Image (cartoon, rainbow, N blue to C red; front, side):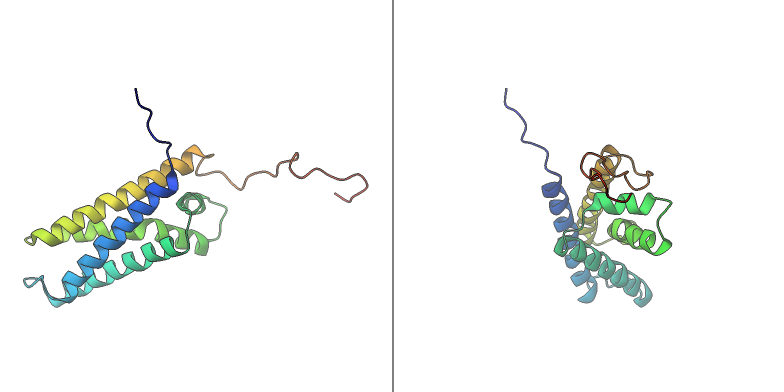
Length: 160
């Protein structure tokens, strides 16, 4: 019986972010080149803004190698400042929200719907893996970890 390869979070999250980035970019091109003829200008503007936010957040996460587990912990930690929590929620939920908007609001265009479905699956997969890893690694709602007394022993004669 063959063994499964080891579970590597970084590869799965990078693949999901890449899928979201690619699908969002292609969806944005479809909106820009007016392939959604039967949509009004306001709807196209909303799709454009949502997809642009998804692209920028996904690109930011990929380029700066943002660890989603830390962002999930920051978002659900009650002791953090509201600015940090809002930024963390945006980094976590923006691709998912734009995927949901594109998938449920655009009908009648097969290629756009297929891209929106792949976008949604990638965003849900990314969020699920990151939330699972964050909850497995020590809980989401916990505060900052206590310092390890073995890693930082007190030296004799030093002030405490």
